[in-house]
Image (cartoon, rainbow, N blue to C red):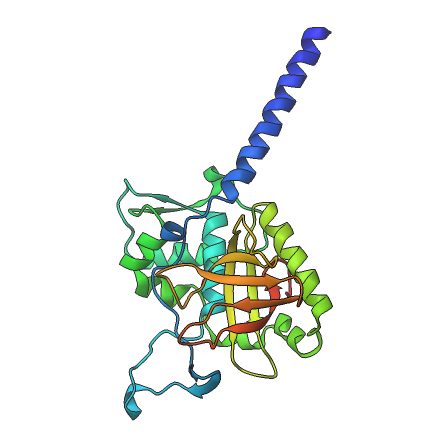
Length: 265
């Protein structure tokens, strides 16, 4: 009888360790490896916080062939992290077969549980999403999804009626809880009724140290910036988020809404 309980204990112990290792693996995100290597562009140019329609090659500006995909690209990074794996020793697929496998990944619900390794969709010939997307960017761009449906998402409607600090406090708590359990937090950034930012980023880590004034710092994958992580901040005294300044955002205040963590969000 005692030996039976020892055997059960060993099985339970192994299960606990296995579950822990699975959760730890789910949070092993590397910016240099796990993002898309190509860049999204906005349809607007921002000058002093004011949005202007971006010029095209036809009217004297530089053409931007891949735009309005920030939601699509953050979702894709999440889906590949959950449902795909890479086999660099195998022969790469041709464009048609690769496109089919990309769609197999991106048609899965992003809020679904991550697949175990033996059930993941395999991408031969590359060691990471970044490497594959840099080498075969056109195939991925054509198969990860269209940009215009992002404007019609039901979850976007929250910006019209959930705009107070209390909701942002709730979002901040949910952000920390999401990261603590090893998941990603995709945030929709909006300053409506102003249009200084209308964007989606994937928050993947919290910096361990806070500023002297209690401000918390988070690292984010921004589809507009595949070169380096961007920074999102939370101010507990003001109960607001701030996002890093760049050529497409004046910087500062933004509201944050979580997306892709459940159906219709």
